[in-house]
Length: 255
Ligand code: ADP
Ligand code: MG
Image (tube, rainbow, N blue to C red; front, side, top):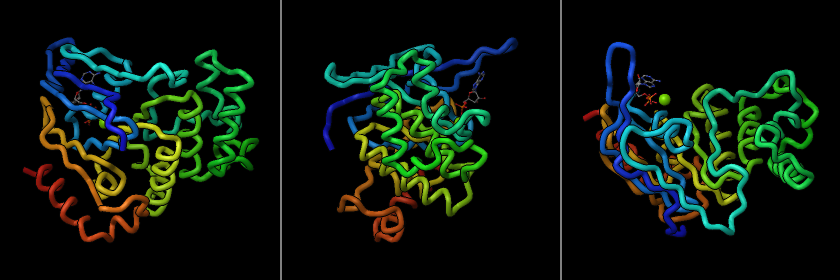
């Protein structure tokens, strides 16, 4: 793994205002993400995990602190950050091809070049024969993959994934999360995943960042190392180190 810092979360504070009150969701949050790392954020429900992804994407601005994204000039992106959610947000009346090209259309970046890149990805990752199908004709896992390819089509350097597998059944979840991890590694992307599934966090990530309950900050960061590259998720789940990592994350979350 290269150690070029690509994302810095510096002293972030986030307050939400409602008509009656002000509430602090995040306070004094700091962490870094390095190029081509796969990070998973875990933490109690409502602690601000989705909020931090929205802050990184620039959809909302922090009340305090900064989000720094540094991307070298040589890297071509249409959109710095790509966002993928639990629901795939595919449009049912558009074909898979039309869905995959949607991000490029919205960015006014649909050219011969960007289109052929998007279609290449679709073929490379096994959706080529479904381009003229509609989302309802695809399984849940394949729909998520189409959503990922739509996100990758705008060549983001950082991918944000907010519980993208949690609506899928267990077996599909394992298969598709493995495929998605491989695609992200293959395409050399940096990824920040939010998950409430400890096994998923441990088996997918290079590091797991545990948030405290709100106002949340980083409680602990755990480096995951199985001593070998390219283990399958199944092999990681059966690895002797797996239970230790699981227990460490678990005990940080309950205490
Ligand atoms: P998580 O994803 O970890 O479950 P969120 O980031 O969605 O948590 O929310 C963190 C906290 O901020 C929660 O207490 C939630 O109620 C509050 N919150 C989130 N979005 C808003 C909003 N738009 N207005 C007011 N409060 C919000
Ligand atoms: Mg959330």
